[in-house]
Amino acid sequence: MEYGTDQMSAGFRARNMLAGYVQRGGRPHAVAPTIALRPAEKQYGWFPVTVDRRERRIAVITNQRLIVGEEFPLWQFTAVQPLPGEWSVALDVRGRDVPLVLSGPWVPWLSVVLCAELYGTSWPPARRQPVAAGV
Image 1: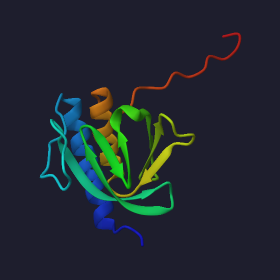
Image 2 (image 1 turned 60 degrees about the vertical axis):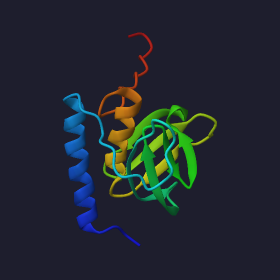
Image 3 (image 1 turned 90 degrees about the vertical axis):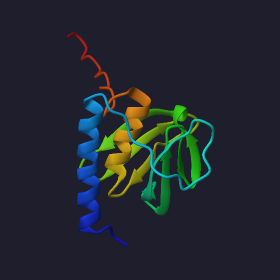
């Protein structure tokens, strides 16, 4: 089952609006929770995703964790790597040999939420490029 054009457009617009808001110093807004929350936890959203390019799940993102069937505390993420043009993000996870890859129309928005929570920015910090020998 593919995602509809309306969902792709809505997710892209939401990503752009949230990115601009975070760049101006804003933070994601909480929504009515769909799960039991922990003390001081806020839910930011829930939406369908494809996990590791094979399994469709409902993702739930809070200020403390990401739930995609399996639950990941946000501190476990060591890198957020948006995959432009693929509506995807690769998340490096402590204790996992390969990145967790999520895709779907709302994943670009999710990337901004994760970056806002982890880095206080709308985009991940730039990765340092290796210096060429002799330069």
